[in-house]
Length: 113
Image (spheres, helix red, strand yellow):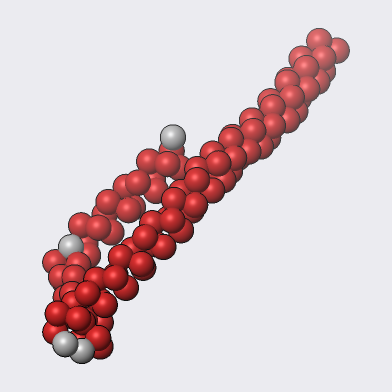
């Protein structure tokens, strides 16, 4: 009987250690994923900001240039806006499901990595 009690006590200690180890492993995995996310987010956001500034100034220059060609500056802005409106409509109606699938696949791949 005493042997069974020691066996059960040893089994409970092993289960407690396993639980502590599992929790520690989960903490380390969470830390790894969050540090990976933050370390990739910052360079991507800096690149995104620089790209947005480039696109903004390129579009302003294009709008002013087209405005000079058409004789009125505001017409250049209308042409650039119409281009982006058409691109948005095409993206929404023809590529929405495809783009959504690609984004979902990327997020799942990053989480399971």
